[in-house]
Length: 186
Image (cartoon, rainbow, N blue to C red; front, top):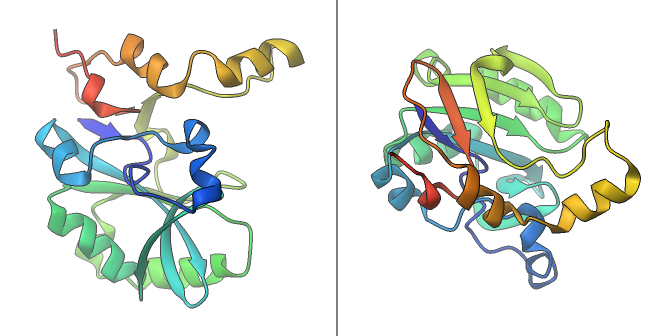
């Protein structure tokens, strides 16, 4: 199964955050285009901000607002995604609302979730965090020197990495990719 990493990162963020989009944008194609390219699982990153749920990736928040997690997940399922991974991207008081609303979801909706994660601590609160094999560029490696990591931050870019490393793997596992349009199915 193909999954897109940070599925909604194609959406625009604030003008300031757009200056740094090479560090957080992982998709150029919109959700419909990703599905047409074979994506079945979406990676939903959220924050609770000013009384609404916001799609985001790290500090980059996207414009659309949702009144509940149920509405947000229904939005993703209505697009045509078969399943999802859900991450709470912040370490703040909204996390308790995340827990409450996630466990309050209808069981059919929760059953489509591969994993629900509190990202700052990588705590898996539901499902299996290891069910997804990620094939994306890691910005920082603990086993590399500081200077090698600095170079890695800028080169290759996330998009350049995807162009070289997005190979379709046909098996029963879930494989998550950046920039899904560069999938090599050969």
